[in-house]
Length: 191
Image (cartoon, rainbow, N blue to C red; front, side, top):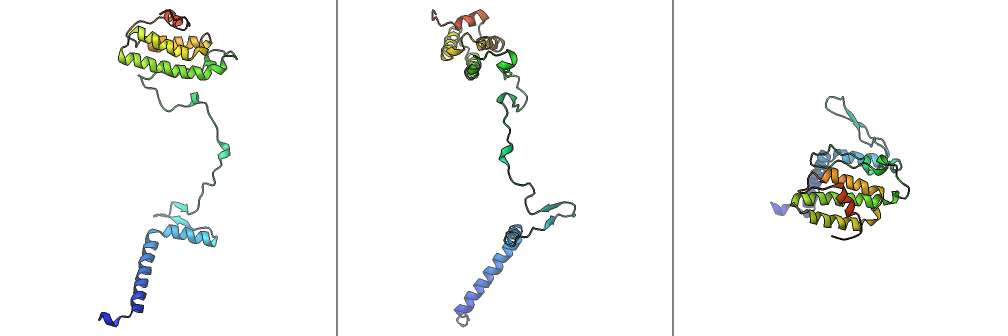
């Protein structure tokens, strides 16, 4: 029986079955993509799709329009808020220009101020978690002050001292006074 089928008939049957199979799969699973391709080729607008009850209609083409990057607005980092603060998290320090009328010469120190506040927050956490001694706190704080020596004598010095007294002093395993903090800012290394 297999000897009576020619190669031509066999090849034609395989091609016909493959076309029928891929046609069925394409029309069943890729109908919307095929319709979109046909509409793109012909240049016509696609018909509107209607769902089950006919109440909700969606066009096949994009209704949102093109992207326009010109209208982007930038906001300051202080204006961003992502949720309520946790009880363990320290509150946000207000921008120095909002609390004290800033001196024009002190505004260029704002970057150093924010970096020093970040390091002071880390210092408070480390001293609190490891129950370090007051001498270690003094040594570490003096290192931070040396790193940001440009802030010595500026309005930011008082803000950092106030932050340490208000946020850190209650958490430290030792007492901390404002006069001690002010003495740490001095460049003389007597201790």
